[in-house]
Length: 181
Image 1 (cartoon, helix red, strand yellow):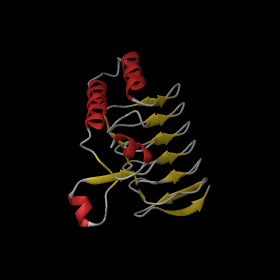
Image 2: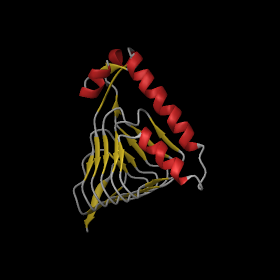
Image 3: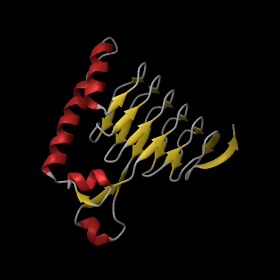
Image 4: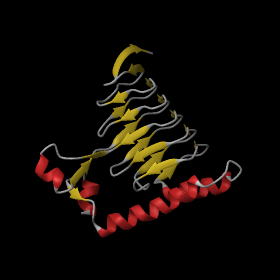
């Protein structure tokens, strides 16, 4: 099931390997969320253990919430404000110089629309990619499979259900482009 998950196929999350990976990530998440502002070196060490990669000069303000952690890559000089939820069953790739407001959700998991497979607990995931120099306003939700192009701004509270091109401002639910930058 772990291999199916990584391939983006339908899988059952009760796989022992997935459970162990998640437990390790949640232990690191809990340790990170208990740090204080004066424990920057410890915070950095925990992020380096928890995430697939984090660039130089990037900061994430706790608390943050993850599924596996290892599928999250954050570029250099990024700032992530309080209460990021990053459900990384599939890859979440964040470019350089990205600003992420408080209470943002990056959600890769999907579930079948058909009631039978959903009741049987099948799930899948699609990756999220956020380009360089993007700003996600507070409360933004990015749905599975979305790519946000470089330099774009997503307004507070937007729900991004499909790809957003580079160099635009998008707002609303569902998010729509309102102007070019």
